[in-house]
Image (cartoon, rainbow, N blue to C red; front, top):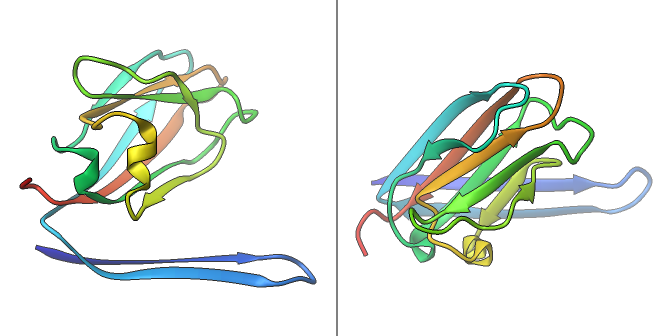
Length: 131
């Protein structure tokens, strides 16, 4: 078991600051994955810990570069079906059941990179390992 906490702060120059945080969240399993997606690579599969989307407490997907905002994409796969491609135009953060919006139980993510440079992807996932 691991206790996971997160915090987020959005600051507007000359305007308000909005903050959110949660934790500690008790998660049975967590993983941090780093993977390089070469320029021109299509559907590079990154396996996640298996289980239902409803068991995921936190999922973060980020990159060291995002191309022009349309060039790095990913699909969610449940092992039989892939979601439509989603653009990774900035960090993607899902918590509090938001992973359910992806529509599938994510067993893997499939990354494509149409940019001229390799993308270093980092994934953090905290979830319950037992239903």
